[in-house]
Length: 319
Ligand code: UT7
Image (cartoon, rainbow, N blue to C red; front, side, top):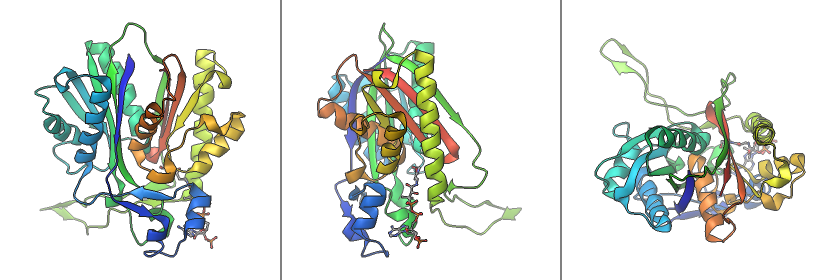
């Protein structure tokens, strides 16, 4: 299994930190120094499936393959357009694919790593030739634009990769897991039960995060995940060319780099102009690295996701 194409798609409209300071009591200095974020993209007339289709088209063009050769399509998202059908089914239609195995994965910000793990297993099990794995989110739908603790952090966007069946496996290690969120450190609302025998008042959909608790969880599990991957593959921290982490906060990347004693340049970051795009952040980052010519065949790239659930997961790939 190899990644043979990458793509990303960000909606055109951008909100700067200064723009947000018109909405809530915040400022560019606080946001930039605490998170590394300068601006984020937000949708106007598009939804999650539109972003996913945009990223998928770029990834397929990059791979040089036609939509008809896609056997499997997995979309990682926590912000689908609608409950039914899934975003993956809308992408199937949007790309004009006549038939494929398609479904959504919701593992919050770890979603892309989960989706990749599942796609690799299904490709092995069924002998599929090509899979499209997409992370797509419209976080702006579930952000409370009056809450400065969260609204400055998130952005909308999508990233995609094309996986191709190959004799030599480019997947050296993979592990996805979750632990209970006992203290409700990262949640959003949902649709309340409302049926003829029972009804609950409809609450809001907004994200609620205990930032410092999530920060501590993130740096702990990223460190553990990296060490587990290295020990299982017999590699050292230096053997890894790039660490591509979920882009939640630039300080998380800096903290982990310092702990691992790895130059922070090996932790490529896209957060400055995307914000936290949840399941889309890792494929968006991969796509930008590819376009900058940083990813060369044979390089070792460690993907690590973490987020609500509480989920986390890592994959070590040979590019
Ligand atoms: O993708 C899912 C995973 N998510 C994460 O990994 C996020 C992890 N957490 C974080 O990245 C950080 O904890 C945050 C960026 C969310 C917050 O940074 P922090 O350094 O932990 O700040 P804090 O929450 O401790 O807040 C410090 C102060 C507070 O004021 P007081 O109580 O000290 O007076 C906040 O009210 O900063 C205040 N504050 C703000 N000030 C200006 C919080 N948000 C803002 C804001 N602008 N936007």
